[in-house]
Picture 1 (spheres, rainbow, N blue to C red):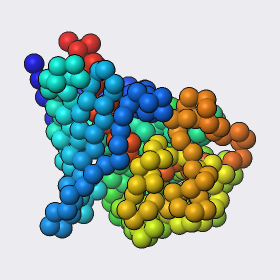
Picture 2: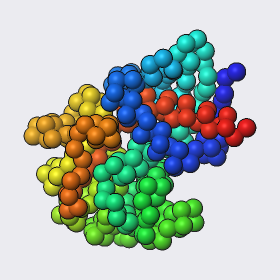
Picture 3: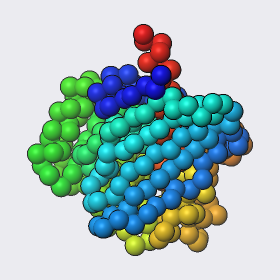
Picture 4: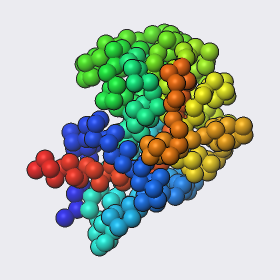
Length: 307
């Protein structure tokens, strides 16, 4: 029987700890060669693109995700999970929650692997769905003492801070400028739709960890090369996808490409991560292909256990 999931079922079943754990397993599987995940493919549409990503966990499952890009933060997605032995469709998820939580889970995993163990304050620029899942996942891996948020809309940033207080139980406040959001913070999240930099690297303190979720390409990026120049540690979840970006991802171009490390390799202990407390680390999220299907597989297991 094929299991069907919409956003309410995904939100009810997938907590942050389960999501981060699934992303850890996915990146380790990709690094070890058990998760085959080619770079995404796209077809042009009027005013946007249809994007396809696929993955195959060898001997267990294969599947794909499709979504469109029409100027919104992240559109409704279709994720399909097949049994690799029979070809049967095991599960289908439609909506926004699975993809958003997947991206948040990757961010939470990056925080857990790269941030200082005592990191407890978080500054976020952005107040949409992606910003929320980054904070949601970070709160599962670090005991946050405070979240400070900035976005262009005063009403949205106030609402975001209120949601953090209500749902995560973490003190939170909204501020009027990006610099006020990030100055002195242990963790920083960039989750905007801005094509131009919203962060000044000079505002960061030594030892800060940054998750960059939004645009990060040569022609449009929510951060500038000053962040890459400041970073002691540059990391991504998929070096292959980073190199495949069109136009190229900033961190995958000279002189930064040779410094870009694989988060999966860090998790496996094969690549060095943070070595001192004062290093600035930056995670450039690409959304490794196949991780949405990996998370859908985890969701089916959570659902079975709950029955």
